Length: 369
Length: 251
Ligand SMILES: Nc1ncnc2c1ncn2[C@@H]1O[C@H](COP(=O)(O)OP(=O)(O)OP(=O)(O)O)[C@@H](O)[C@H]1O
Ligand SMILES: [Mg+2]
Image 1 (cartoon, helix red, strand yellow):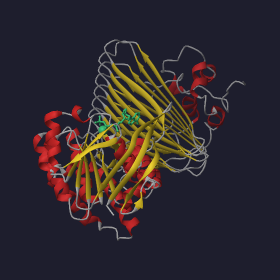
Image 2: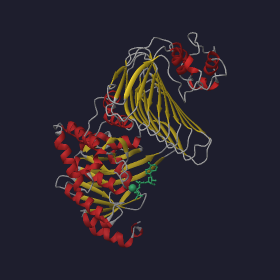
Image 3: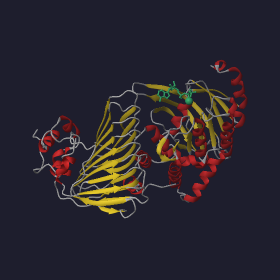
């Protein structure tokens, strides 16, 4: 296998110097090593990294922004970000490269509790985004990706102590090769909630890296996905508990039908000293029709006693008992199957973007009775 | 012609490694307006009868027939049997998270209406009707928004079955141990529901282990099912006799 390589020469940006890697390998070499490590190969086992890596320096636009004009929010374009804490070259060399190539990034600072949602609409490749929510500030963030062609989004979020972010993300277009990288760092007693609603596309890759970096932080991730026909979805979720008494809950339901290909990798890493951690992850996959390909891999690394951790992955078909219950009430086979598969996804659809997610993922059949 | 006619029914349960005969020549005729209680030892085939009549997968009919108003049931798909008027109240109703009770009931009533060529009920009216039914069975209408049977207690699940019975208004109700797991008050509520359902044109097959239920739902006939056959039939006094003597004297 040929080595993975960056698409264009990359100079170490000035902002990088304060970051931890300073003094070690020169940046291009460090990136080269990370890109070709065994761990990286494992993370990109089911999706070819080349295409995504090759597009990390492609021209990027700003997303369409709505809701920025309210007290407590400041949006600016900056040439260089301040150093990012919790930002991990080893874990995400592509995202790192994208940040280095970008001449502009979008910085969103939230300094107070906000009332209106902030909406980011991505219609194409968009610039890296950095969102910082200050102490005791709160934000409802809605992200809608509807890209007609290949696109990438890289987002770093830093939640200060007691900050709160409710994040909804709909990626329901079916074109192109789409990569979304999301990194969230939670400081003490902050809370983060993600409603992720997604379809497959030619190749969709979602990397989510959550870092519980302060005591008592709380993260709740829900994801509903539908991967149908000749489409693909690859989700790589990493959740690190670095500090005590964090709580995390992840529920990921994917339906894979008729030739769809779906990969979910859920890694929970509980560091030494993160006592009193409660980490739960449940990934359920429902295969329908012919030739669905489903890869689901749980990974657990626990270096502390005194934790509660549950990690489950299932791959199955529709429950025959549930199906019979519906049939016995006069509902025909097709309608019963549709109800059950809709119900399976609906368990993970919620938040401000739920309606359009229900529409796309479940179809018009939704009746709010 | 009876409402339900089961004649010489032989059926087996099919598992991965074997086919085991359970029903061995069962005859039962339920006329419109009648309630038939079926009692009998554990494992005698009572639930198998209910499952075979409603078309549950995993059973094989080896011989015999079952008709509802003269139409053969055993060839039909489960949903077709329901559309024809068969209703099974499950002993262990399944939980279906993500599908709300209300949505499920609407899908069911719409399917039945479509199959019978009736107009689909007006949604607002339908919701009102379901709420009223729920209240009449001491079920909190808030339950209707939850997933089907999701997080319901055993007794609440049973009441939900009776609510469906009243809503769907089938020709034949087969109630499999609907009384088990109910507290004393709930038993009365459920029995009152079944009595409300009863009329001159429908029929009830009531599978139970407890004579007590038959004080509230007075049966026209009581049958004892043992080893796949009905070995004794009588009126409600048979249940009292069984209560006193057990089954051994019959077998
Ligand atoms: N799905 C199944 N798989 C294996 N065996 C079965 C199945 N269904 C029924 N049986 C067997 O068939 C026999 C009859 O069972 P059935 O459930 O009809 O009895 P029952 O009369 O309803 O008993 P109970 O009073 O305990 O409810 C039992 O021996 C049971 O183990
Ligand atoms: Mg039984």
